[in-house]
Every structure is written in C-alpha cells, then in structure tokens.
Image 1 (tube, one colour):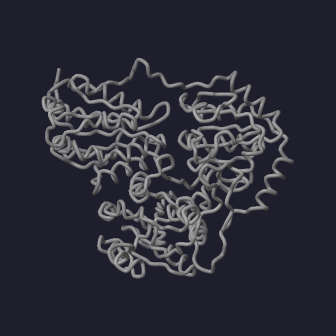
Image 2 (cartoon, rainbow, N blue to C red; image 1 turned 90 degrees about the vertical axis):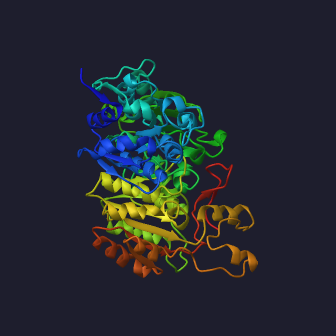
Image 3 (cartoon, one colour; image 1 turned 60 degrees about the vertical axis):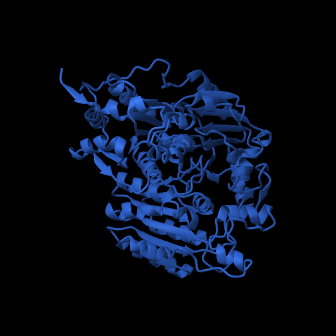
Length: 572
C-alpha cells in the first residue's frame, strides 16, 4: 500500500473535508506543512499578521459561510496566540479546527524551544483537543476533529501535531466515516416534551419567545419567523440572537438584558410563559437570577444538555437542534390570543422608545441610521464596547443582513479581523466593521492583510478618545474617576496633573493611508452620508471612516450591576 508523510495526509484530509481556505502563520514546527500547501492550488492560504487576528478571521469565515473555519499555526507562541480566539469561538459556538505545530515527541516535556502544552492550556475553552502521538491515528483524528467541530453544539477543536509524527510515512487512506464512542449528538426532538410546551403556549395569556444565538447558528431564522407569525407571539432576542426574526418585524420587541429595550425587559418580567430557544441565560440577560421572568413558566430548547437549567430553572427542558425543533413546531403551532398582551407591549414601547437624546452633534444613532439607509444587503461585524451596544440597538438585521459579534467572551480586537474573514467567505457581500478607537488598535496590523487581499471593507471607527464602556461605568458608578480609560493620557498628562494632553494617537486616517488603504474623517452629521458613498467607490482596498464622537454619549437603557430587568437607568 502506498505510503505518504503525515504532512501530505493533512493536506489530503483538508481537501476531503471541503476546505477551500486556511488561515495560517508559519514557523519551524509547521514549515513542512506550509511546503505541502505551497504545492497545491485547491486550498487558498491566507497569511494574516498575527495569530490572534488569524483565529478571529477563521471564526467569522465560519459564522458567515456555515463552513468549518481552519487555522494553522506553529508551536509555542504561535499556539498560545490562539487562546483568546479559541475562547471567543467556544463561547459563541463557532466550528473551528485549529492545527498547532509541536516539537518532536522525544522533546515534549523537556522545556524545548517553542514548546508548550497547548492542549492542556486550552482544555477548558475547546470542545476537544488532542496531541497526535502516533502517525497511524492521524487520519482518524482529523476526521473526528471536523465531525466534532460541526455537530451538536458547534465549537473549536485543537489538534496538536508533533513535527516528527508529521514527517513519518504512513497510510495514504483518509477515513470516510466517524464512530466516536461516547459522543453521539442528539439529532431528534422529543415530541412528547415539544407538544407539552406547545399546549402551554396555546393556553398562555402573555406568551413570549426568547430567541438566542442558537437560532442563528442553526440557520433557523426563516422557519422561526413563520412560527412567530402563525402564533402571533411577540419575540425578544439576546444580542447573539438578533436577526432571529427581522428587526423590522412588527412582532419583534427588541433585545433584552443589560442594554435591552425597556419594552423587551418589561415583557420578560411580565410574561406568563417564556419560550426560549438557543440561549444560555447568561448574566447579561438575566440580571438577578431570582427576579428573572418571575411570573413565567419557562420552556427551554437547546442543543446542549449542560445549558439547560444551569442558570435558570426551567419547567420544560427540550434537548434539540434549533432548526429541527422549530421545524417541528411549525407543523403543530396554532394562533394564540395575544391582542391584549401586544397592546401592553406597544404601550411600553411608547412609554420609553429606544432613542438617543439629541445633543446637536453627530451621534452613534445618526451613523447607524445612515448605514441602515445605504446598506440593505451586508454583513456587519463589531468589536466590543459602547459601539457594539449601539449597533445591537439600532442596526437593522434582516434576512439579507447578518450581525457578527463576540457575544460570550466580549473580545476587543475582534471586529476588524472578523470583517476580513467574512469578506473572504462572502466576496459578493458588503462587509462593514464597526469598532471603537480602543478595539481597532488591538488588531490594526490587519490592514496589511486586507490591502494585500484586495478587500474593499468599510471600517467605521467610533472615536470618543476613551475606552467608552468602562468610562460609562466610571461615570455612573465610580464618581467620574476615569482611571485607565483616557486614550490621550500619558507622560504629559501625568506631568501636568491632567491639564495638558497630546493630540490623539494614532492619526487613523494617515495610518490607513500608510498601509495603502483609504482614510476619511467625519466630524459632522452632515458628512456621514457622503463618507459612506465615498467608501463604496473603493472596490480594491479597505476604507477607514473615523467618526469623531462626543465621549459623553452613553448607551441607554442600562441595568446597573446586580440589578433586575425592571431596574433600568433610562438616561442621566
């Protein structure tokens, strides 16, 4: 039987798995894999400028295409630079397969150059991780990795590849099936439990759907919208669930939670049945656990058994894939009597509509509303902070628009590389990244990747000269002591006791231009539309638009730390 090296088998396996793009950064322990990739033309190899950016790019590629994202990095620091991205993907259930180089087997455990126990380091933030110790296991392990990453609750898988194993000759065969004892993801719906839940839905006077990220991950949006329309039951979403139904749908109330809409949070507090699909009930949506949905019976559909009744006790647990469950629901649901309930929700919306106080200057709402007007078919990626919350409040997400954001881990530096991954996976889509001035600088080196790959991204930087979300907490709860959040503070600031500061650094426009990208600075609301129009004209390079924002702009509503959904700060 013909024998080939482990390096050749890896490339063959990637092709068998349908991989068309790999995000990689080379090193001594993976140079032979890089050489094998160089010899073929079926898999596109993207060379980012930092491994953390690389894994975020693979992450957004996976989220926006439905494929498994694939990474390749070397041992030691190359592997450890994946950690934040692996945790990001793990929290948000993103299918990744990440290959890390490793020193030869006889050096493992000897503190060799660029050796770390990356499987041990990442055990709590990956769905599965393993070091390949025997060449004969390589094909099976790769096959299992892709299967584990994409099935059940999706997630990141890490495969550690010792250099000597990969250089060893072995079978050229790649398995065509998987059989993992102890890992049998649920693929069906318990119809007894589902019908019980639907009877409760029919009887409820104030029913409410809560849609989490699981609806979007399962691509169940269209059928879920049908269920909502058949039942006439209103919907709230988590941030990750935004877009489960179109945000302009009359039955969509808004996001719930820390920065959720008043009507959405009140609906959760007053409903008598909360029918939740694909959410973990984390602290950002629940507030005080004992006060969450106090009047409601709770139905919880989730693909992950461990997520059910972990944070919130539920009355009807259903372990199932969201698409499978919602499709079954669509066969059995009936209209519900919700007119009085919907009237109450409309009254809450009128009492406290989602808007921003007009200060006369350009506001984040002005920018996002113009973006809504000009782009009806787009992928929007964000960093984490105030700008992210503004986007989740005001950006319209419809069947032709997708929001990609770091929900569970809250990773600054995610937005720009995510835009790169999304555009590489969806070349015909407009891709817009929205970042703060802090988060943008965390992976700003990816301008080189975007320029060299000729990606016409639109990069919006909301520059308020502060780390805005932390500053907001400092203003509201820490006596306006703005420690470690002023992005212009430094030696001059300390030397003059805060009376003098240098100009903001960097000059984002000049920095973009230094990479060969385009840069535009916007200081007035009248300039917003023209800036977006100008960005559309650049079809080969990214365009950065720096929006100068008042640092006093705040995200409201807001629930104070440790508060309940009814204890909302509306403005101040």
